[in-house]
Each structure stands twice: as structure tokens, then as C-alpha cells.
Length: 258
Ligand code: NAP
Image: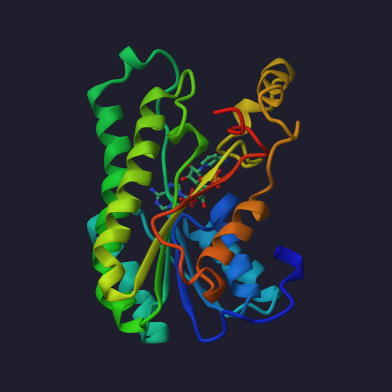
């Protein structure tokens, strides 16, 4: 859908996408923008924000951006206010940020690593949603999308704790969908498989590792960030008006046998 969004079906919508200066978040911002939405991008590094905004504007997307560490409460408030200052409203929140500071035996996860993951991957997603809710409600057609992972369904070796965080995110999405329906806010989740980004590089930079993972994917290829953006663009569109509390897997058939 990325390069072929034929109609501007998201015109008049304002979307805030976290962790969106590269990878999956950037692809989501680009595709929502291509569908007519005005987009706010953010991440920690100013240079990344500036480059992302410039790249989006080159595609004639109404894009603005600011720095923000989503684990920081003040920064979460800052990105909501930044969006409202520019556009006076917010229709779509895509909560995409996550960290994975630990690989290996789950018993070796330190307290600080666990806390960091819980804080950034789960708590900040909830807190940001909470802060966005009054504005999404005012929109009358508010949408929240969380970015979970295939690991949230079936935990992956060596990333056990991260997998738990992603499972929690899908559970949280369902609870929020129940809670926010009365405010006309839909809440859904995407669960990407292995998508080619810097985040997942370790899984395909080594040939043996790459073949090991490919053998678990029915389509025998890794995904593209645009394929995640396709799902998000659908979920926030009016075509998905009766879909809430769902998680769409984007994994080339990795889950087909489960
Ligand atoms: P990525 O390509 O490494 O991009 C990460 C983005 O997040 C960058 O724009 C980075 O910019 C920003 N960022 C990092 N920490 C941040 C923070 N604390 N606050 C705000 N922004 C932050 O990662 P990705 O692969 O697109 O991953 C995006 C999401 O998809 C994550 O939730 C990840 O768990 C999920 N996911 C990815 C895969 C995969 O295979 N790639 C699979 C399943 C799920 P700065 O450095 O400027 O902050």
C-alpha cells in the first residue's frame, strides 16, 4: 500500500507516531501521511527527527517532528502538546517504541533490564495513551495502535523478557479496547514477525542465524516495514470501523502452525 495509496482516505486526520524516525515507525508515518493524514514524528535524537521530517516533506506529507524519549513523562506530555499546538487535535496514536536490552538465558535478566523494558515497552505506552485519550475522544473517531511482536504470541529463545512485554502489550490493547469503546476510540495492535530494520539486524546479519530464522517463516523471507504500515493504515481507516481489540500478525506465516 505504501507507494500505491491511491485515495487520500485519511485527510483531516492527525496522527502521532512514536519512535518514528526510522524502521517500522517511519514507514507507518510515511504511509499515514501518503493517505492524507498530517503526521507528527518523534524520537530521541534531533538529527534523526530533522531527517525524517525532511524525508516525509519530500513526499509532500504534512509532517512535523520533535525530540522525545517516550520513557520520560515530560517528553510524553511534550509530544501531545506539540501535536495540539500544530494541529489543535489528535485522531490517531501509534505507540511503537520498544527496547530490548537483554539477550540470552532469561534467568540472567537483571532488575534494571527488566524495569527498563517494563517502563518503556509497556508503562510508557499506557501512560501516553492515557494522556492522549481526551483528545482522541474529542476526535469522535479516535484510534490507538500498539506495536507488539510475534514474540508476544510465542516467546522466542534468548529474548524471553522482551517477549513477556510484548504479550502484555496485546493484553493491554484488549483491556483498553473494552474500556475506550464508549468514547468512540478503537484500540488495536500489530504483531510484526521479523522485519528488516536496525532493531532486528542481529537476526539476519550472520548467514547461519539468517537461515535458522528463515526456516521458521512459511514465506521464506523477512518482512518489510511498509508491510507493517499497510496493516496500521487499514486499522485506523474507516474500513476497519468495527474492528477493536484485535491483533494482526504480520509475519509471513510464522504463526500458521500454532
Ligand atoms: P528501529 O528500526 O531500530 O527504529 C527504532 C526507532 O525508535 C528509531 O526511530 C529510534 O530513534 C526510536 N527510539 C528508540 N528508542 C526510543 C525512545 N526511548 N523514545 C523515542 N524513540 C525511540 O526499530 P524497529 O524495528 O522499527 O522497531 C519498532 C517497533 O517494532 C518496536 O516496538 C519493536 O519491538 C517492534 N518490532 C520489531 C520487529 C523487527 O523485526 N524489526 C519485530 C517485531 C516487533 P532514536 O534513536 O532517534 O531515538
